[in-house]
Length: 281
Image (spheres, one colour):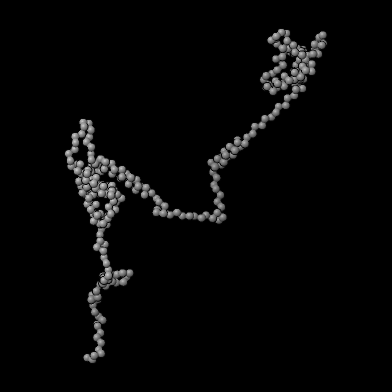
């Protein structure tokens, strides 16, 4: 064999001899891990559930254990609460002061339940150390349920989007439909407007003093020229007629066409034509 000879590998090598890629990035096979790849020690850590406060955590533990909130097992609840707090500290999470304060309250309630309780006064029940905590948990659960119901209501830009619609009125003119009730309402509105513009016209009654003077003279002649004062007036005709009649009577007296006589004080008044008296004389 000469020194310039070339060795050619067989083309029918088995496929199993090609190593499988460790991973594929954007479709490209990755045969080995990069030398400068850094994986943090807590990259695969399991994140705990997030709670809105110590009461939310206590309510979660109670519901998870399926116990009655009015009869809380303080020993078990305190133990689970402290385990969660320690887990939070192990994850390098900043604990709020409320969590630590609630841990102290749970430990205090647990210790008070282990100690013998003082005797209650006759007729009174012994105070339960859990009463205040139970009250706060019930109030918090009610508020949380109300907040959840409010959150379920449709919200703009979360459950639906606002849509603006432009309507071109020039394209189609739609006449409104008129029903009998609309027509009736329109007619009533016109009647109300008409009543507001109603006018009351007062017509002046034309009364003539001269006509009443002639009427008085006729009455005196028919009655023989001698009539009592009250018989000349008719009150049923109204005050204007009576006033004009009285003015006509005074005018006749001023013109000396009649005279008024009275027999004595407070006696009835009588009217008599002056020409009649002159004839009798």
